[in-house]
Length: 181
Length: 390
Image (tube, rainbow over all chains, first blue to last red; front, side, top):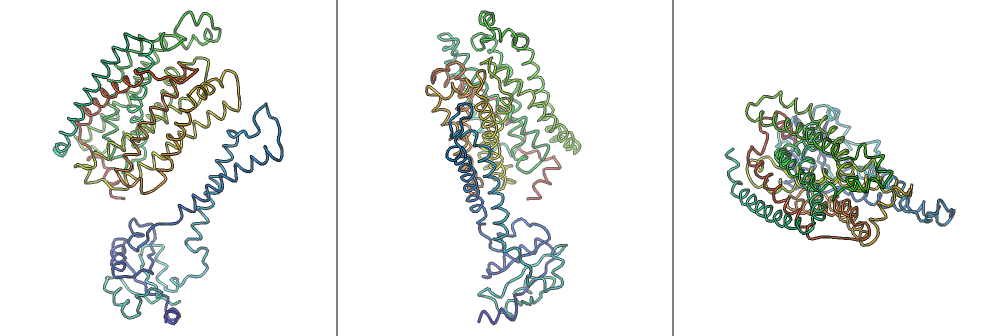
């Protein structure tokens, strides 16, 4: 059932004039029980992620794991080099001179954490994505200029081509479009 | 001013208690001064440097706030201004050091200098008259910036003149610059010269960051209390506490960064004129304090402040702030006390009583200043802008 729906339509998209209307509409859509939806704006809008039901990003956890892995790798790399593989006496210091390992450990922590942040962000957003159905709506190009869009996807359990369209129209958008898959 | 009425009884009560604690504490410390003058001055210097950190930290965070003018700055601006206006009290409280010069600083003892060639070379800088001329200079610079930062801010409350914001913005940068320079020199004079053979160029900056960490925590703590009352309750949002928590996290990380920088360079160099400073702090019980400071001044608050939900709840952030304020005492003691007792950990009852006494006086002066003005700079055009964007 869901598959046939999907093959017909990716979803329904409503166009709004301003961020306030979009937040209000998103909130109402969430209250009406819609979950599979997304909002598109030309700039970040405070409160919008919460309005479309975005709870908490997994990104901080990914970055933390990246940081711990990076720090461990950084320290281990130096430990193996100067204690196990090439033990050299440098000015009588102990082989495991941990204070002098700190800068590299720190830098590796930051490096791997930063990579985890960027790559994790890409992965969680499903990027890179060469094709996305929302661009099938010609007016969607305005989402990077001065219009605000809310798209309810057909994957949503409550989605119904007729009912959902009526619901979106009740939110007083400028227009409602059908999004081809 | 009417909106302040709701908090006034509460503030009066705290002020009264602080004053009683201050007077009792200093009376006890004064009695201690007769028993052991040397110990009194050592404890006094420690306590004094803790409390002046709040006034000077407020100066530099005010400067930063006027440079960037975010919402977090406007909700704590009046707290910082009140704390900075305690500088005349602190200037007076600095004077007793005069009578303890030879008890505190070995370079002030002629017999020690006569037997020490290095101190003879340093005596062009490290001598009593020049020490006091410099101290007067530091207080003049600090008071000057504090005077104008406060004057223009309160003038705007009265007149609503928008151009005063520009002036405050222009003085923000210089106030940070001159504070860092004078505090570097002041910490060299007042603290680093306790061990006159030892030197570290980043030492002043470690002091600066310590004061900023302390003040950030103090401002977050006071704000969490004031936020329950008008007028702050009208504008306060979780986001503001989140920002303050983030700044605390950033400054605590910076504190760790500069401390590791100093340690790493001295440890790597391993030179006879530098390394004793750390050797003293790693043996005879001081080592335990070193580990304590690393764990509770960095690791614990770092992990707690990484978590978003801890920063967004005022009461949780306030508890973390209390912890940070307390651990600042330990860090400062770790810097100062081993200079006097290099061979083993040493805590005198005056080390507890004197800082508490000075703190009572300081808190009373702070509340007295806090009550005198509106709690928000309502006529600052940047304020509306800052709150509108949130």
